[in-house]
Length: 413
Ligand code: ADP
Ligand code: ASP
Ligand code: MG
Image (tube, rainbow, N blue to C red):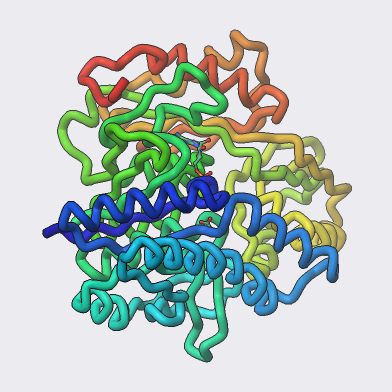
């Protein structure tokens, strides 16, 4: 008898008919003799609707109250699924994050999991009950409701799988696996049979929202085998697992695009020691993550400094940067939201050279200007004008041979 955590995303529980479909799947696994723990998201669009309501109530909603509000979406779906299963004579019970002991820090709206007690879950499983757990939520040490960041139900599922030492955590979604690029953007994208935690982590953090970044981090840390599969059809999915020798055969495993960044440029910065610390210190204190940074030599001992921050933090970062720019007597500050980051990812980059130069060549052939570049051992990212993102993704996908089934077959299609 295997213990399986099954997580269903928003589209998969988007209406009653789809909830019936999930109930069928859960019932099937139960009948096959597996122990099942179900983790659910809110219905698709519901969390966005709640965020919008909050901003209608007040421009900068209090984050504790935001979590109180956002956590309601998942309560709806767990209760509906548990009712459905019970209606079929299956002993299911819904549980909130608090009830299953998901304890987090107090960083409301992006809380980190500190520990998972899961006592109630073990008890339920011992009694033959199918627990249906609300994803995306926990409580802090003061018992206030917290949420785990957008897409956080993936993390709830992986964390429960780790705590229960489950045999597998299956993330059921609207695609049948992790693809070489977002299949909704690059129609030629292929499903990947297995992908290394490290590659998946880069893909997620560079824009592939099929898995939430922290959930991959958590899975790697606790060695949880994660499968991504479709809740709508049967067939093979993608296994996210430890790296093996096959995985280095191809240089590039995937292409991602990310529109969630904005670029800030401080023009005419005095070129002297200590200036970077004076600029980035206050930004870090405000918990704004700076991603890429470039500095251009200007004239008369002045330089221009450009960097990217998450678009969502732009409102918070702008007055801070304007304040610092004034203090250090820089000339001006300019802000562009219309940028995007295109990235190539692959553990094979460690052993294949020439990936960066080929990437630059492909972008230049398409007439796409590169605004910023950053690299690590297994990824290369370029910031470009947002309007060229889809073109860049498709051209790179094709140029790196991902439109075809790659040699050393990592692709399932
Ligand atoms: P859920 O609501 O089930 O959590 P998400 O919308 O969060 O689903 O994630 C699934 C979506 O991720 C897909 O519909 C797809 O458009 C997108 N996606 C982005 N990059 C990839 C990729 N490399 N492979 C598969 N899906 C991807
Ligand atoms: N409902 C939450 C969101 O939309 C969490 C999730 O779906 O994973 O972000
Ligand atoms: Mg998701």
